[in-house]
Length: 186
Image 1 (cartoon, one colour):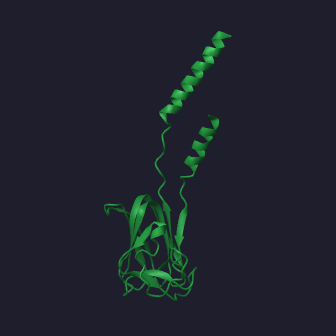
Image 2 (cartoon, rainbow, N blue to C red):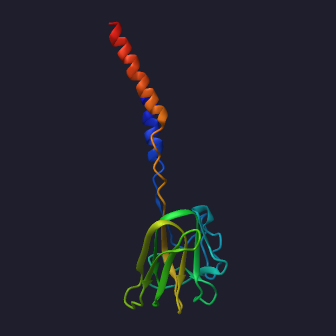
Image 3 (spheres, rainbow, N blue to C red):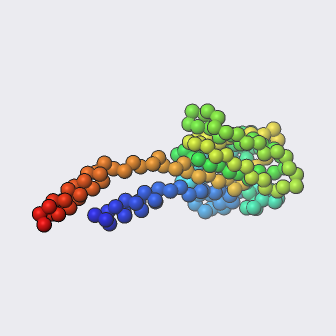
């Protein structure tokens, strides 16, 4: 019985979340990406999809994963939209061009959960911004100028706490009753 309880504890610990980082140099299968490649479902197996016009932006100097990042559409000033298969609790991204942008997080109904502005900083090649919130389902990057993101990181939302099963209480009570019964016979 003790082995069963220990297995239950370890199975519960296995549900802890791990961060996922996309650097846009390779797709979800490890194949190299190329400039102007559409992103759409390029990272679907990682639990994230991008908007219809979002694409790879190549040959950007000063990034941690040279030479590619992601941008919103062929004009590079469109919004870049990200949708998660399951809610996440943390999103971070590096801004890899000399322009400003806003990163906004939304829930499943497109209600704003948080927003962060990344200003123009010409001497910082990859400035990071992040948002932490409960149940982030979408993220949108917006700007009025050319921009690209890199090292896009997200963390799956923690699963809800699992209450102790009532059966454990019943088993404990039964064990105590058996112990008392044995003790009273002796």
